[in-house]
Each structure stands twice: as C-alpha cells, then as structure tokens.
Image (tube, rainbow, N blue to C red):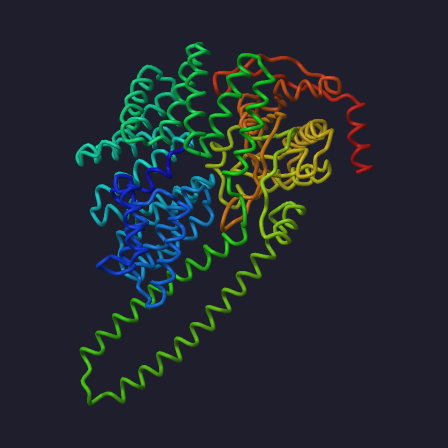
Length: 611
C-alpha cells in the first residue's frame, strides 16, 4: 500500500494541490489563445500548467514550455517544463518517462545551482522508483533529499520527504523506521499548521498500528485521516486507508464490514481512475472471498488484480532506463565541472590586468587542450562501460529474458499460474560468521552455493538470487513445466544430503553448517527490475509463504506448504506438522518431506532426458 505520488507533488510544488483550479486554468487558456496577456508567454504557459487538472493537456503545454525555453536556453523554464511534464506523467501512471523528466529537471536545477530544487526533484525521482517497486533506489533518493533539505533548513519540504520515507518503510515492513520518520514529519506539519500533511501522518500511523495488530488505535487514526482528506477531496490515500480498515474488521471476524470497506475502496479508485489502488482493492476482495470459501468470486477479482498489476509495475524499456541513469550521472558531473570552471575563470578575470593578456591566452589554450583530452577520455570510458553492460546482460538474466531485452528493447512482466519456490538458510550462520576471517567466510559460502548452482542446472531449475546465506530458486519458469514441484524436491534432497555429507568429509577443515529448507507452490509474477544492476526476480504471496516455510523449518528437514503437498503426496512420503499464520490472518498447513519414492525420481530423470 503506497501513497508516495500524492505527497511527492507537495514536496516540490509547495501548495500544488491547493493551486489546482480548473476554472482558473480555463480562463488562462482563453487569454493565452487570444494573446490578451501582459507578461511573457513562458510565464503564461507555466501558470496554466500550475492550475490545470487535465493532465493530458498539462503534458502538451509542458512540451511547449520546453520547446520555447530551449530556443534561448532559459534554465528556469526548462526546469519548470520538465518538472510539470513529470507531474503529468506521474498522474497518468507512466513512471519510467516521469523519472526521465524529473532527472532532466534536476539537471537544470544543478545548472542554476539551486539546491532546494535539486532536493525536490530527488524526492520526485524516489517516488517513481517506489511506484516501480525498486525500494532500494527509492530509499537512497529519499535519504539524500532529506539530508539536503536539512542543510537548507527547508522545514516544510523536509516534513514531506520524511513522511514519504516513512510510507516507503511501511511498504518494506520496517515499522520502527516508519514510525520514527512519520513522527518527525508529523511534528513539522503541526508547527506549520499543515492539516493535509497531518492527515497523511495520522493515516500512516494507523497503517503501522494495523500492521502490528493494534486495531482500535489504528481504526481511530485512519477514520480521522479519512474525514480530513475527504474535505480536501484527496481520494487516493482514502482508497488506501479503506483497505486497511477492511483488514481490521476481518481480524474482528466481521466479514460484512470488511467487505464493505474493500468494496468502497474499489469504487472510489475506479471513479477517480486510481490504477494502482484499483489493483490493491481487487486483491483485497479476492482474499475476502477466499476467506469466505467463495472461490469463483475470489478468482474473478484475482484475475482483475493481475491485469491491473502488470500495467502499474512499469517494467518496460529497462535498457533505456539504465542508459538514462548513466547519462544523467555523467551530465551532473559535467555540470559541476562547468560551474567550477566558470567560477575560476571569473576570479582570474578580476585578478589579471590587461598587460598579461598573452599569458591568459596561453593558459586558455592549455585549458582547451586539457578539456579536449578529458572529453576523449570520458567518451572512451562511456563506450567501454556500455559494451561491458551489454556483455554482462547475457550472464545475469535467463537466456530467454536476455534475448527478449536485446530484441525488443524491453522485458514484459509475465504471470505464471503454477511455480514452485524454494528457500534455504544456514543455522547459526550469523553467529559463526563473526568468528571467521573474510576469506574463510567467502570460501565457506562459495563451497555450498557452487554446489547448489550445479544442482539447479542438473534439474533444469532457475536460481533467482542469494541474500547473505539464503539461497532462493524456482521451478516452472521461465519455461513452464508440469513436474516443477518434483524437480524442486529432488534438488532439495540433494542439497540436504550434500550439506550433511560435508560435515563428515571436510578436507579444508572449514566451518560447516546445518541447513533449513522451505518450499511452496502457487502463482507468481516474474520480470526484470533495477536500473543499474539488472535482476530477474519474482513476486507474490507464493514467494512470501515459501520464505515462511523455510523460517519455520528445522535444520536437516524439508518443510513444504499444503499447496506443494497436494501435488507431491503420491510421490514422496510426508508427515503433517501443524499450521502457521500467514498474511491476512489466514492459516497454512505444513508438512515434512521424509523420503522420496523411486517412481518420482525416475519420472524426473525421464523428463530431464526428454527435455
């Protein structure tokens, strides 16, 4: 659940939400078309984009501002044009192009040496990363903007950036950090008398309380926030908060009330074309109907969720985004060098008198030669980096995905109905790793993960990623297979056996560990994320439940969910071990897989041989 986009607009436009007035915009448009205005054309266009709520038209007028400002290199309006273009694209749900516009606006802010505008565009860029679920990049940009706002003593914008960061931490389930950032922002808004900002803080605090199970306090805060936001006709956060109210009443076992809040969220989102929240509301209704055991309705809402979800992830044109970021960073560095060179040049002009003009010309020639050498060197570095990026692409993505990226220039997110996901984790790794040297630690992890990679290749499985001592893989993608659950379990047994044998046979006398294994089967969404380091990743409740299976396993055991058990129960001997609580207060049964049946092993081998 996210409300970044709304707060971001406040962060760089100050009173933007209050400035929007369609009647005022229509009046200005008539004046502009008739030519009946006393100030400059660029100022008139900028005012129209400030007031207009028709974002397709804002996009057109922003392009006109950029075109006319570029004729005379007017940085002030080049900044304003790209900024308003980013705002419109954000409202229209095009986060990739919005980020491109914000980065261009930031470049002109650097050229004007306007640190306040630089910090504001950082917040805007962070919002686009958050909307595309690239949370690491979003956090980095938020933190940088907050540090800059502090140094500039921009208290109001600092408050907005803090609340945005707090909302990001809610999404990342870092509730302690979320509370700290939200409370600091709330204190600022109270001092400023900014009621709308206080409403966001109140609602976000309610979301934190709801996530931690403090339902009464959460309900009070969320209801009060909705009341204030309704007065401002600010519907996006209201739609988000309504789904949290649905969670609260579901925990109270009041299904009718929970359904009423979720349905209201969907209706509000559809009325105001809030694409991301339409997806979240459909997911909430799907889970509610699943809870009520009405699987037909649950499946209908789930299909709508996936349909909207694929549109809002914006996992398109990854290569363009990567090149954009590289070029932007180089442009910023070049701008800094240009500004520094200009200041040094002005100081020399003031200090040097006319009689040493010959020396000045000589120095200028040396500077030009040095600059020419620098440009050639920089161009060479850029070319080498681009060649290196293209070469690495084929090594870090699945072959089919890499080919799609090179041929089409983008990678489309894909939905897989049935995938089996496995997580592994070493027992007491953190404690033991502190006793090892860096070389021993890397050698120990490499010893295990190199073997795991061989096992993945043997069974035709896809390694997704490693996080510290955790290893994540999946079967059934990017090429769907009917026996992905069996393949994962065969690989799990080989991993378990290898780890146990390693404790007995240890020629290098290194630290050896016990391993926990967790497995779950279900639908996932897969795609490419990142703008600097590409990564093939998967999302969905299936992944979260697989992780829960691993964390609730015990060393030396393979713990599987009810979903996987129903698929493999005839090929593997399993024993029931109880239930755990999952997301949305639902229960999930768990089973230990005790041994494999020869028939299952032979079937997997035969499938591997015949492709």
